[in-house]
Length: 250
Image 1 (cartoon, rainbow, N blue to C red):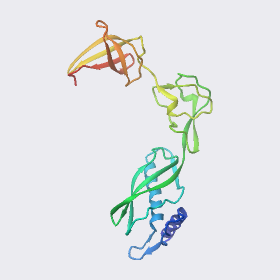
Image 2: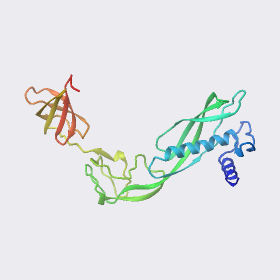
Image 3: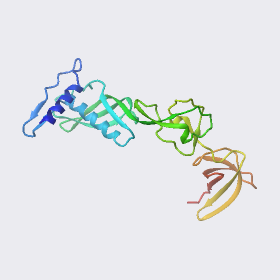
Image 4: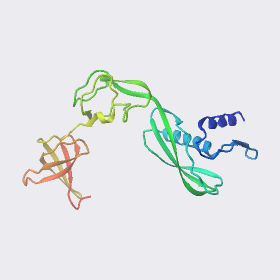
């Protein structure tokens, strides 16, 4: 029963009366089920917090959420027992301000949508640059430090150094590294020779070509074939290596 009272207090603390909206009935105890039955507005907020908490469970770090303001339920003619089903979140990054939408059902019949405005606070560890780093340099473990962070991290903030990336632009000491700071390191450079596999079904022919554009692993680059001087698009599969799939190949 103590846990039930705590839930009731949480529900009441989350919500305030919406100006102009009909008052919610007071929470009641369902004697048959022996559980607190919250009014729809308060129940929606509790369900919204539970939903975003479950969505954040697979993300790194720890999140704490709060409802920014009581949601405004639409007027529903002849409303019966209301229930709510999550529809979508406004963003994948759950730190900062965002909202969740829920489908409304009245006696299991669709009755519209409602929006719940939320805020998430994040705690975890982020990578911070120790000393200034130059453009095109590859950050090394001794050039960054993993530090505790609490609040709303920068969008795309990193908790580990990804392999195969370099800096897109210079960064200053104390900067928190984000994905947008990085670009894939090219492993095929324009003007340099490339060993290219020409694949057609089970037939594979290897020839030397010249790269006319640069690309990282997984990029598509333009190559010039040696004898015909024909340009082809090829998939970068390694350092100085690419593959062309001819029509009819698998």
